[in-house]
Amino acid sequence: MRFGTVRELWRYPVSSLTGERIETADLDDGGVAGDRQWGLFDAGSLEAAAPESARRWRPVPDLCSRLGAGGLEISRDGAVWHAVPSPQADDAASGHLGFPVRFLPFGMDAAPRYERGHLHILTTSSLARLQALLPQAVLDVRRFRPNILIETDGNDAGFTEQKLVGRRLSLGNTVVEITEPCTRCAFTALGQPGIPFDKDVLHAIARHGSGGFGVLASVMGTGRVACGHGVAVV
Image (cartoon, rainbow, N blue to C red):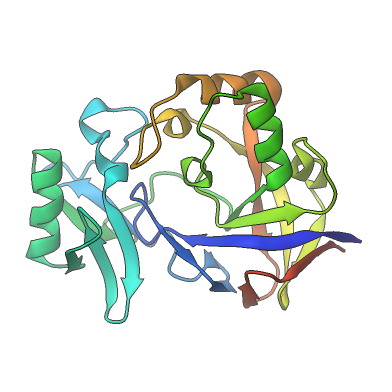
């Protein structure tokens, strides 16, 4: 059954930093290849960055991350980029935050902040529903950090994807299974470049979306997806 079209694809190479919009994405057992493989940590305690809960970490989403031709890079301004890992990258982030931090890959020495589904999927229907509830809010998709934004067929304005929990979607040459609603935290309220702080966004999601906005999904088979690919419920 036809569901919609892949409108945007996003990858977040470093957890909590701004990610990058991409035209194609390879999906593997962990989701989008290269997604959320690194974290930013306090250089002394190795506490992971938590901008949604600790004020000193609030500026983290102003930092940018991308996978460049030579590998992972971060930037304070989108103009000057620093390879990760490197002292230059650590110094740039430390100067931005005002205390010593370092970038580390998630693994044995640096555990991810939380366990999550492979993919975060959001639809234009959900964005339209939330915009109707908050007509003055700036609901830039970057506020919600999805991997895949699906433009749904028709003019439905509702939390459509939550009705698909337990179902599978085909997109590109792969299939994903919707596992659960994406529970939201205070990160959705935080300001980012061009996006103002807005606590009402999280409050509206809690009141009308049962705390969830978008869904999490598992990749059932590796493959590639591109913007413009059709999406179907299978």
